[in-house]
Length: 398
Ligand SMILES: *Cc1c(COP(=O)(O)O)cnc(C)c1O
Picture 1 (cartoon, protein in one colour):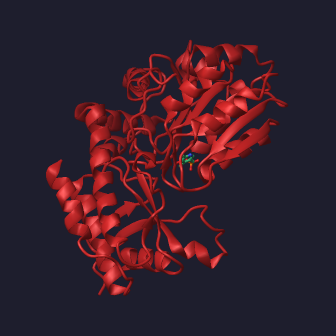
Picture 2 (cartoon, protein in one colour):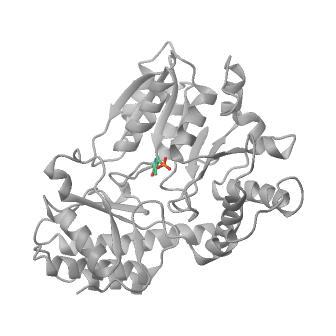
């Protein structure tokens, strides 16, 4: 029986669930973009975006999705013929590397497969072997959304520093921003990219490139940077329109204001802890399920798991069947397996993901887990007992 009426839950790893406060803030008539409240509101958003990234440096805002931020970041520091080192833990590292290749960079990929985090020692080894300093940047993804692998960015910085190599550390935090702990300045990140539709709970359309002084210096040495992607006037505008190189994304700014208010009212540390506990509840359920039958967490090592997305393996057919059941019978949309097998390959039906980023709480996650449990029962997918109970214990202890 179709039981989908009521609030649906889009539990895919972005776009994420939008809070009522964000939707209400965006539901309004067009503001004046030349004077008035939008101007002050924007500078407040810029200030608070830095707070959430734990940085005192610069942020440039782009009207575009995460791919736009990838290109924007690269366009400011990479010239044709430069080499970038790309340690990958899933699809998104490859995607960023391809973006660099499209701008004429040589792309050196260090592939860590799809089930582990970046090994900083191997990155350091690659840098140590580059005595000519051809490598201008290391492009690392904090949380790879396809595999749900999370890498230790502070450790990566330490390993890079130990080699004395001058390459910039550029980090993709699109999936982790506002979910997993990230400290741009304390961790020594030179460039960071994020977007608004995941942990920031705003519909897709705005993305961010953060950069420190070392990256700004590198930017100043680049002979030619596209005027549109140039981060300099965006980060330090003399007049308001330079913030966006044109018309402001008016309604996104109202949405962002509301989202940042939610995050700051809760407290960033609490936001990170909430995501951690809810992730632990999910892992506890998955551990119980995987005691019998085909379900398996993609990332075995707890410390290498994202708190915002969880990738699962459940064997051919089951992943797609389970997603369909949850969506069609219960109003819960789960994420497809991404990059685990090509779409035409029947094996791709054996993967799925939980998105648990941004506006999520205990009852949503408990509902998600109990619904998946119901789906496995309905579809006769073998699974171990006690999953919902195990998750409840994590929530109860929090
Ligand atoms: C979602 C995501 C992207 C791409 O963002 P788009 O808005 O889809 O362009 C890049 N990197 C990571 C880690 C992501 O999660």
